[in-house]
Image 1 (cartoon, rainbow, N blue to C red):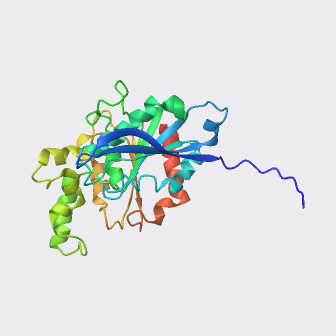
Image 2: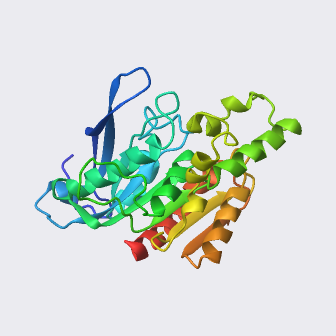
Image 3: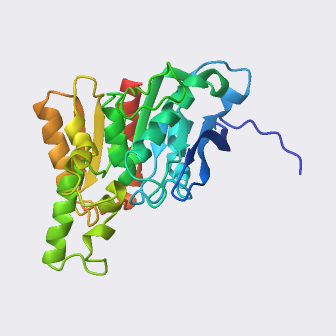
Length: 296
């Protein structure tokens, strides 16, 4: 059988590029580890189309343990962004046991500066870069949203790490509050199946100590404490049945942003648990796209 067809052009050809080294950093034990970025790029950037596209930096979750092997695992769920004209950049960061805070946010913001420095190479509009993350990645996203420069390093000098907008899925806004909430759950025997030793809590491993012992560092590590005039517009989504990061984190952040008259859109996903299927539905995609389209 021979047949000629002319498909309707509804889908864009998306390329995945992996293994892009954006920095090399020392980790615990003295080893030097390369940090990578993976890109989802619409077809046009690989053709004669020279139009620069907005970029969304993706920061993965996983209790700050996912910034290596899991850094790009969510890219299949982010195809809808590439199909709608966004370059998606999944950024690795040093994980627990490799480095303590603020190494993680320093890595993410170094990745932002790398993308701006190499914007022409990758077809990125450096003035239209946003950031998005879930859980621990949401925590780093909220820190990045403050655009205060305090976590910038001397890598890629003369290039800022400013992002135009941020999307936080069920992230942590206040490490001190999380720590005391988890202590309470231990006391109430709610945190079954997990260690009762506070030193093993991910937020404590991140800081390298109990928050009460390093209060200044713990405060610095909470995006809620750094909200300022430069903080960009933020979209927050959190499930009201989240058993991992209590929705109270997003409530606190929403109230803080509102009190400081900063732009925030907050959606409570009824019945959703931590990273459950509700977050990957078309209705949520359209909310995210609507926000990004307005801000980028």
